[in-house]
Length: 218
Image 1: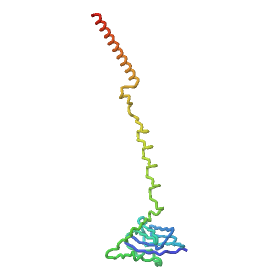
Image 2: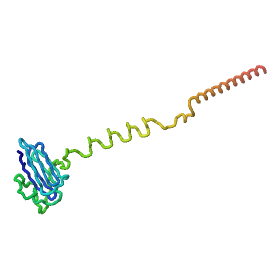
Image 3: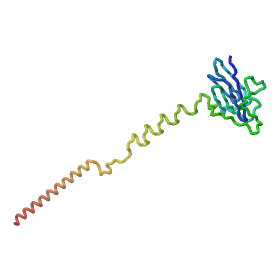
Image 4: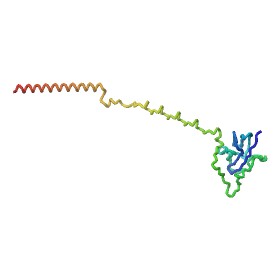
């Protein structure tokens, strides 16, 4: 048979502090509904504990926070409407014996200086709205949207658009700048050698004629 843990509560105009006093809890499950229904279940030692509280008014689940500690479960429940509640639970039934006022956190509505917020002392809170698997929305496997395998869109295999395989396509043939192809160059070279040989032969004939003339004159 399950037992009821001790519950302490206090409030401010915009929030309610609920502390479930239970040490060394295992498999703790806490749920908060917008209508103001607070449920809790857990194991501690050889016993099982359950709790259901129908709060005085509606609450803001998304902004409410919870801290599960070694000796207690502390919840900051944000009210749907900022106003002071007459009591913790709805209805006219007598408050259960395990629900008590948390005098360490209590503040009166008519305090001259106004009730101050609590010093949480660096407590680590989780939001009730994020408790569904504690997952981060929109982050499947920590992948970045639009980046399949860390590839860059429009860059197949790191290639540059318009340059397949890093080739230099579309550039004019360098032969156009070098005055034609190799065959034309070879023909021109042969013509130049022929002209040079002809000129040398003509010069040799002139030299021989001049020598002959000189010997006849002498």
